[in-house]
Image (cartoon, rainbow, N blue to C red; front, side, top):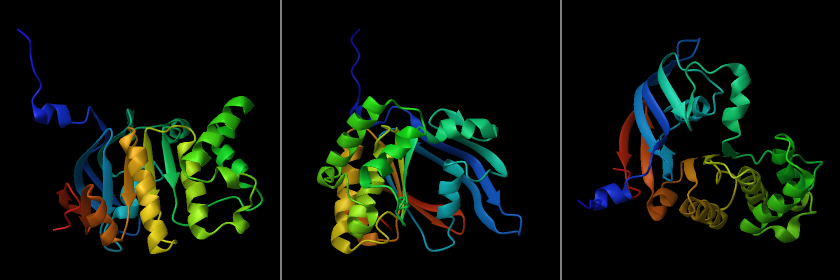
Length: 241
């Protein structure tokens, strides 16, 4: 008998790219950063992470990048089990993700092209691949004409777009954006999130920390809210209630 998928099955993402099971994190000083967090983020989703200062957002992201280790529970990211991951395997995990920082973190002595290319140098890409992929990444963020410019010659918004190109250049499955609009003006904030949304439409999972509730409401993606180390809301469509 021929079987047909329901609408819910068609819309369901294929697999969790991030999964937290009973995750708690307490720092040596006794600060309880996360408590019994259970969450699945599926391949192809765009998710905003929101919450007040001290809510646990930074710890949540650091655990995903394996900058910190959980005290209890299990974390899986893109097929890797982070709970018992060996230190030597952490670079393999991070090669599956691109990271966009609030403070840009560009190398001031390198031009735009080389800042983006650096992400490919470290994984041993060939010169031919580097030239092709860096050019493509810069074109995607509208900076192909700035390839030979130095970071000091760019506006804050342009510097953040270079950071986004650097995150894109190795074609990651997951982009982690930690307050990427924190140091740019409101118009550029919308441009950055619009770029991330277009990237997401092509299949890349986006996880973005933000304090800007206007962006969350306007872009209508899934929202996970943390408070006191716990998930207090998990809503689709930019609903912060």
